[in-house]
Image 1 (cartoon, rainbow, N blue to C red):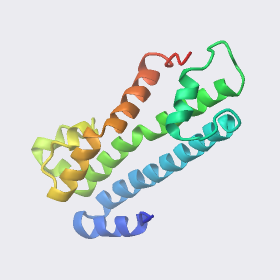
Image 2: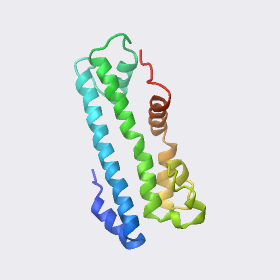
Image 3: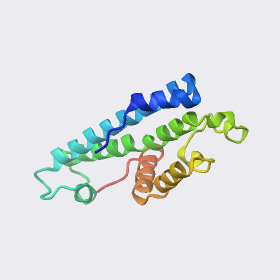
Image 4: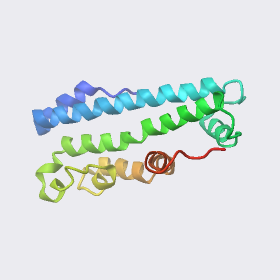
Length: 167
């Protein structure tokens, strides 16, 4: 698997968009890397907690097991629910961190049409910006991805409404 070279990214952005943009992009890129690390940890916790309960552990079987369990049980299954919720809540902000990296990396704030987004930089906004064709295709594919829509919906529901009842 190819690794993201954060220093090369920072230096490349600095050459194209300047030191301020480079610092912003680097900060958000580091946040993406940390969020991925957090999500991996929470996923490994779900696997560990359910290892003896699910024979072939995949993310789908783990989620199915959690969603179909007895809601009154506060043992390892409840801990797995907490880890699964944390997993989704770690993944969800990655979209917005990437949106910030794109916004600052391409200096979109210098364009009056995009300056208005400065306080609300989200992938839902950035996907509609005038981006280089290859980047635009990746961003639009990410926004349309069904699994990422599920992550978005699950995380937003548990964040703004209530913890999803998995019982």
